[in-house]
Image: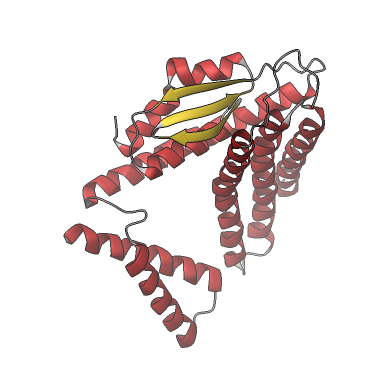
Length: 107
Length: 163
């Protein structure tokens, strides 16, 4: 049962990471590509780490601090990932990267 | 003065707890080093996060604890939204840039709103200048959810009590 739940977490995590990568390739410009990577990487990584965390709790309960560290990783990914996305967006916008509009050529 | 002491104490406790959890070694040397480092950090940077009086901080943290699960659910929705747009053969995107004003004042509230916008469906923050947000939306509907019904702005304003 535990294995199934952990596998589901990992599978969803990998699915979202995969979608992020596909979006990076398919979307037409810098800003829309960041939509794909900025969101999907956050949840994808969090789900993968959550899966590892669950597995660790039940199989190695003698080292609970590892779980705490994994939990910190999730928290910091949720804070830093949107911030990094924001920094990229802002610098692109300030240096004048043109946003793609419907009907334009791919960049 | 009372508020300041409270801020230092809370920062110190959080920092020391963080040290304990990350080090995982509980002998005298490491504990003393942790105590000294936490004390220095608490003295230097206690006013970065904790400002104002105690009751306000407690009710703010309580409201934040309610806000975070809602935000997590929004993140899940955002990912399915992006997944749909990425995997749909016709790629239903129509990007636009919108601007709107907020009433939020403190840095922490602005950061919370900016990061929330980035993580929720279809929108990413580009910049904030003097309380004016510049947001890149991937299509029309997600942009409307920010400018027209303003659920998220109200929720963040509720958390930080800045209307």
